Image (cartoon, rainbow, N blue to C red; front, top):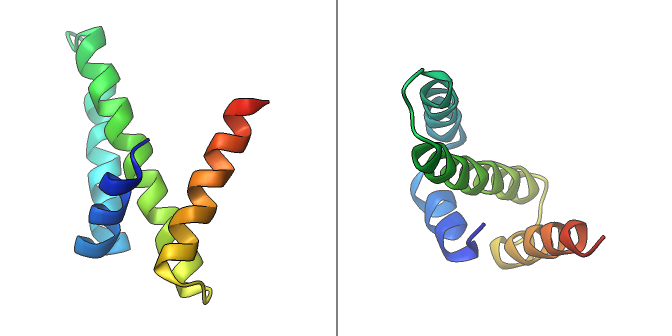
Amino acid sequence: MKIPVIRQLFQNSTPAQLETTLEVLEAFCEFRGVSEHEVDVAGEMITNICGALEVHQMVSDGAAEKDALNAFGQKVMGSIDR
């Protein structure tokens, strides 16, 4: 998870675009012959896209972009610390 990447995805992509990309990456990971490294890279991308989708939702619920990004980062870091 990289907050600058999530910010960039949030600012430059609609939720519909992110959902479509997410579906493609998930399908890619299911192909036979995809290496573990490729799955790791796709997994990182999927994580960032999911983060951008969550930030879109928080902003549509009334949060400021900066606050939504910080809240998402804290949520993820809190789950890692457990």
